[in-house]
Each structure stands twice: as C-alpha cells, then as structure tokens.
Image 1 (tube, helix red, strand yellow):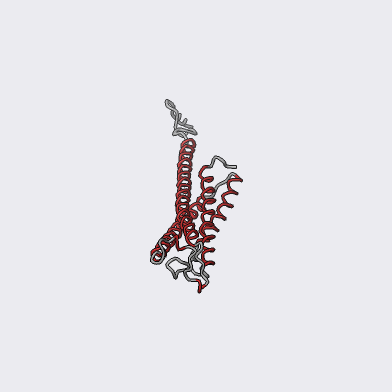
Image 2 (cartoon, rainbow, N blue to C red):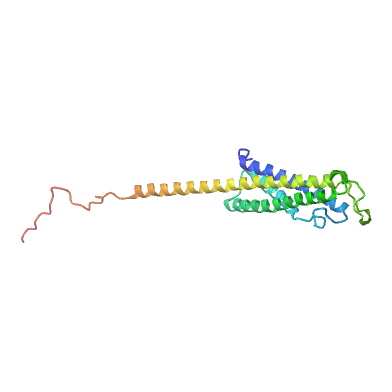
Length: 216
C-alpha cells in the first residue's frame, strides 16, 4: 500500500468528510420536506431539491477508486487527475450556490417568522399552518444542520480542488523532468557515436608519397 503518498491519503480523507457532510445536507432536508408536506421553507415557495445528491455519489465513487489505487500502490494518470480537478472546481460552484440559497432562504424565513414570534427558534413546534398538514417541530434544527453541512461541503470541495490541482502540477513537473532527461541522453549518445576526423585511412600519412611509375 502506498502509505507514503500523503496527497492520495489526503484526498481519500477529504472524500470521506465530503460524504459525511453530504448526508448532513440530504437527511435533514428530506425530513424537513416530509414534515412540510413536500414543501420547503427556503424563500417560502422554493423547492429543496438541489443536486446535492451529486456530491454524495461523486464522493462514493472517488473513495472506492482512490482506495483501490492505494491498495495496489498506484495513482491516477495525468488525464484522470486533470478531469478530477475540473470536476472538483465545478462542484465547488454548485455547492457554493446551494450554500447561498440555504443561508439566504433561512434568513428570509426567520425575518418573516419573527413578526409573530420572539425568535426564529421559538417558532419551532408552534401551530403555524396545521390545516395544510405542516409540522414545524424540527425545522430550525434541520435547516441549521443543512446549512452547516452545505458550507462544510463547500470548504471540503475547495480542499479537494487544491489537492487535485497539486497532483496535476506534480505530473506536469515529472513530465518536464523526463523530457529533459531524454534530451540529455540523446545528446550524449549522439556525441559518443560521432566518428573521428581522420578515421579509416582517408588521409595519407605524413612524409610519404606515391612512387613514380617506371618506363617500360
């Protein structure tokens, strides 16, 4: 096992953290949407169905893939590392948009709810809209947990983007070193194979001339 590959181990640990944080988003929001009869309190009329599950699936796939690399003592290629870096940057953008949506939506809900209750937390469990089969017992904890999870997931994806970019830079540096070594080796081989200037008797020895022909 490539235990000395700190970068690979750091990526695996980050994907594990990302998987746990994805659960901290999906599970509370699913519970909240069920308690609100399929609705979501974010902006009062907005759906909670983002593509947060994509982060969960990517973390699962990458955990399995990188664990196999570590077990076999291998690592990803330059192309796969580059694709991974691009994917991490894209997931950073998706996660930060979801984080802003959760934060602003939660703030908007709480600003509206404090007109009837002393604080947003005190509104939990109150009979706000029972005729629509809506339960507000745990909305504050659920959305608060989702808010923590989504911002933590954003920080994790930023770290993964940095790790994957470092791996691409390392591959690029190794490729440059290999190209330089190949060119130097070819130069040395060409120098060793070059023939001497006066080889194979091409020049006459000094002090000797061709004897004159005798008359017959």
